[in-house]
Length: 308
Image (cartoon, helix red, strand yellow):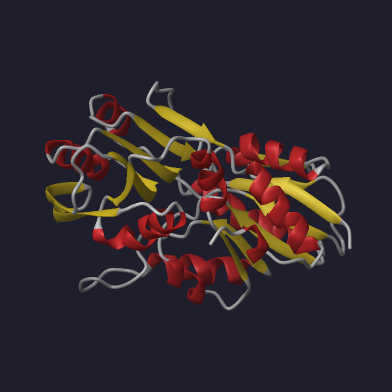
């Protein structure tokens, strides 16, 4: 079955890299907007019977999600043989349960919409919570960013490093790195008074003289990371760095990071940076997605790409 790779308008910077690593050319896709902003997608080549991969992260604005849905519907109505939605950053994943009355489970809603649009498969990187895979009734290839970060860290001196989770919810993530590199684990327990605002952080573990690497999947306003860095330094840490998969970086995030005690924030390019920062380094996920797409098409293992 022929392979076709298409990109949404806001993920072309990443899709061009993925296509290059895959060794093919991007499919021709046009986007039109009516005067009121309504989006129309048009595939300018045949996808009949083809293995079709549609690449689009669903970060803000919501038009990116709508564009992906329209791309899926376009491919379905053009008789694509098999449609895979490649979503490097899966938006609305932070609302994965009802933690209080009268709130949505947005991650489940998005899963339903993607299936209703006609996706046969979803490929993504670092869901906010692993259980989101269970919201789908179609196959999900859940790639792990440790395949990007671990090779990067292997080239560093980790003799004084301890890995830390900036909150209790991310302990599993940080523990994986601590176990892999045989280093100690530190936990930062945060208390929020409201969304995106951290009131207090308690450090669990000895960090005196240690070079701390915090691990998280999303950095949004960077409030948690910066306050965790302050708490760690006050407890005697020698330095603090952070690795975060998805650089949402909204609000005052860049200012927060620049003024923080974090020495370096290492992220991936699932979301493009809005501005440059001397403290932010970016690693590309393109080789990982290119390999995953190839393995998917050739019916080879996806888990072979993981680092356990």
